Image (cartoon, rainbow, N blue to C red; front, side):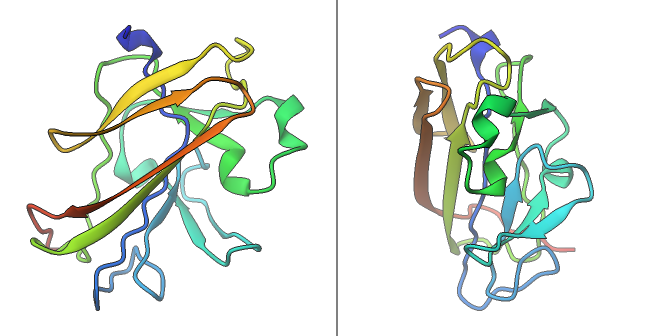
Length: 163
């Protein structure tokens, strides 16, 4: 796989440790990140009532993009309208620095990917690997501009974070 085509289409984390709370999580302990959302922006999805924040505080590589106007009509969820693409580098990492991350705790991580022809290449297959730390998680393969991909994992935090 050619590293120039490792594109991150969309990512959201759902972090739900028992009893953990932090300023960056919502009232029930979830952190949902909308990749590509304007820096400093946040919103509540009216269908799911899930609060989303921009990914700017979690990564310092990549570029924000909008999906093609042709695909905006069919998109029901706001989280699919923007994305973060990674045209450079072989690894681009998100870092969660939250007092809600406790060593040894289990976390549910979910990621959604949608291409939406953001680059005008009309559905050139997008394929890349996801890793959690050094461990392989999944291979994302979005084959058409209108297809999406979802993956999830339950992970144990190997380190905590304190403020």
